[in-house]
Length: 210
Image (cartoon, rainbow, N blue to C red; front, side):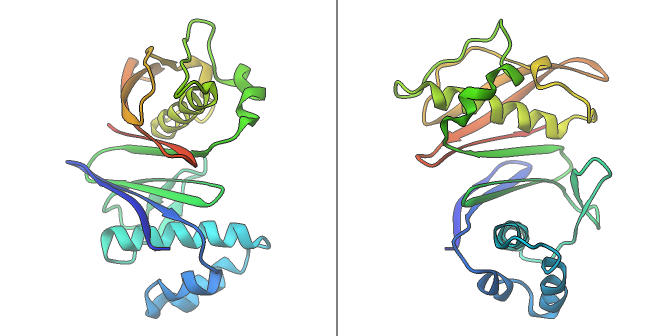
């Protein structure tokens, strides 16, 4: 499947790719001149799913920008573009990959597949002073939005040891899409992060541009 969802902001490009192609098909969607390099790189992953995730992110990035970019990684695992042309954040969940690039801005994105496992780990990210509201009478969506939003903010922070419970979502009633705020402590003091979100029948998607 080609591009599943795309959003163009004032200083960012965001897209979601539905990962239903084979590894061979994904390789054919990448620049022919570098296909052999990608084939060699993806060979280090034993899992077919991991190969699909890795390649889907590169295909999505190529689709967004129309040119090949090399993704490298900092010591904490956060990605960056080797040529420094844009900031970047990536995320994937079962069946989907997402990429956001920022022009002169820091960016973060997170995508989470719908699943009730989130109920078993609420103590890892929900604070006692936070209110979680359901979407269409299903509290799972509200929990997923809290988790996803905090993951998105974490990707923009320079604190690899940050606790997700140090971040607090302002109360909001989930809709199919919209915005809300997350507050948290950074090296510069208290900061507010404006989060955009989308609820799809399969997943929640959150992103921010700083």
